[in-house]
Image 1 (tube, helix red, strand yellow):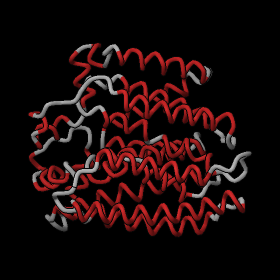
Image 2 (cartoon, rainbow, N blue to C red):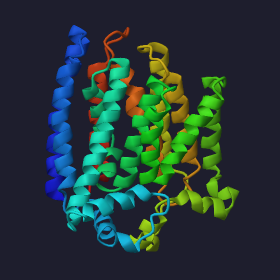
Image 3 (cartoon, rainbow, N blue to C red):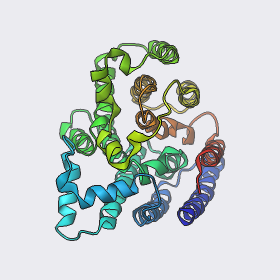
Amino acid sequence: MIAFSFNYFILYGFFAFIAILFALKVDVRQKQANVLGLIISLFFVIALVVLFGSRGVNVGTDTYLYRYQFSFYKKLDFGTEILVTWLMATIHLFTSNPQVYIFWLSLIFVVVLFLACANFSRLYNYNVLFVFFSFVSLYFFQSLGINIVRQGVALAFLFLGVGFYLKNPKNIVSWLLPVLVGIGFHVTSVFVLIIFILVELFQKLKLKSYVIIYGIFVILSFFKVSVLTFGNSIGKLFQGDRRDSYLNGDMLKEYNVGFKPQFVAFNTIFLIIFLLLRKYGQKQNNYDILLKAYIGMSCVFFLMFQIPYSDRWGVMSWMFIPFLFAPVFGESGKYRTSIAAILFLVCLFIIFQTMYYKP
């Protein structure tokens, strides 16, 4: 684990240095260097795939579980997440080495997430290097890469579909296919889709109303109103990864449930940033759709504080952050904020790595 963390920190440091150079180009020369950013980003994609895919069993709390599932997948029931079974069965046609399965999961996660970033960046003429760096800087990225990888794969496909939807909603196959693939890897990702559907159905509802709803859900969560309030049977549907918990023994551990002010603060700080970007930053089509969906998914997250693994619901809202944060890197905005944004992301990385790092 120490060797893995050291390599990860070195890789991130190099990535941060490159990102600062590109930010200087945007703020000083007002040019994005999109092609060069794409080429350099591919290097970090390959490096992350190798680093995540070659990790040992002692790296990540769920790595042993994934190896166990691969070796005994025929005895396990993945329910509606049938693509997980298909991937394992396909790999077993060639090898029974669980490390190969770990590598393929890492490859799919990083590559599809990068494709989602590239699709979004091309749609709004942003440098993909900035969007991808934003993901790598946030503390949940490493967890998606070495712990809750199936959820990472699912969310990567889902946000790839979101990008295609924003580009052309009428091309149903282009965005629905990756969304269905994501659900096939982790069924809980369907709730992001549900939130988007609700946003579209109530598109006349003003953003101000969403902010008020956000505040109401924070208050409800503080007073321990949760999904469990609506009945144990419903609550169990939202817990997710129940099979994993039984297999790795986590069901025997004491859960840290209850109102989590640190998560509320994290989501709220970014909400304030997004509202400021919306008012003063570079104008972006469909920004309100993403922002409303972020607020909606945050509200769902707050209702999960009373159940185990609530942070695995939080990541569904956090996935919106790099896309909503992207306008800060625009060269046509009134303010030059790229360097400040990179330094902000680096500070976040250092703070959370310091808080959660375990050698």
